Length: 146
Image 1 (cartoon, one colour):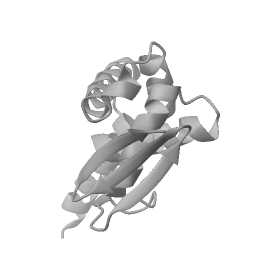
Image 2 (cartoon, one colour):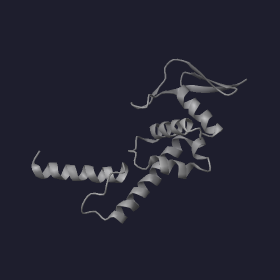
Image 3 (cartoon, rainbow, N blue to C red):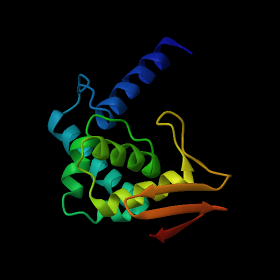
Image 4 (cartoon, rainbow, N blue to C red):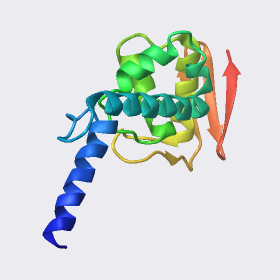
């Protein structure tokens, strides 16, 4: 790789980091325009997560909570961002009850360690949240109210 190409690659990486990961605005870019592009990308990301996590996204506080959490964090895809965000809300004791059930269902269906992409579970799984049991068998979740 020539020096010109490596310089261009470094500048592109700095721009992407400023747009999606909260890095400083690179030299030569208009800060206002970059901020507008960053907000547009955050709104788009909010919609992607909402498609994967509809119960969580139905909460009245959803857009503000998610935008505040996502700013400065690189996107990981709707499913993974939703997992990370819902788990963060749970750790902060701010996860609404219906969204807690949605998270528990996802945790029954998917293996996710917070580092690698989520993978579907192969073996049956049983989880409990409050008075509800969630049984996952063959990729389907069943709610058993007790």
